[in-house]
Image (cartoon, rainbow, N blue to C red; front, side, top):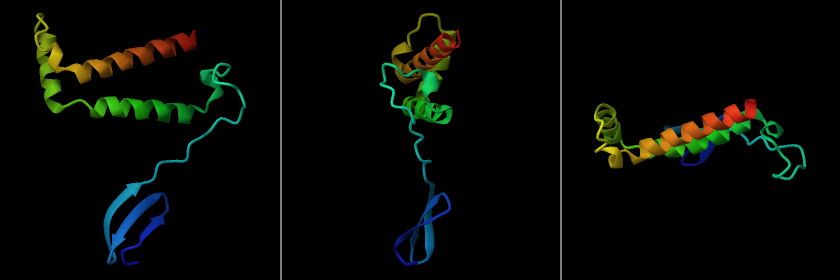
Length: 112
């Protein structure tokens, strides 16, 4: 194959001089709505559940990826320290927790 890129199955295989360097799974195709509803008229049930889950995961991944390993240590210390002196050092964890709570509230609202 030489230095050209080829695709096999669902994997993007990059080859150079016949040597495989990096296999990367290709993202699945987006599942677009088949209706012509305006965003104002659409509900969560108007969208494919797999696509909805995928979009939520993409947002969560961005938030979780921003968390630095040291933040977990400060967050643990903050849980046992009532003064909250390390709260400013755990901003990304707090953002992730806030997002989790927002999604939880949203799901509960949609169910009832």
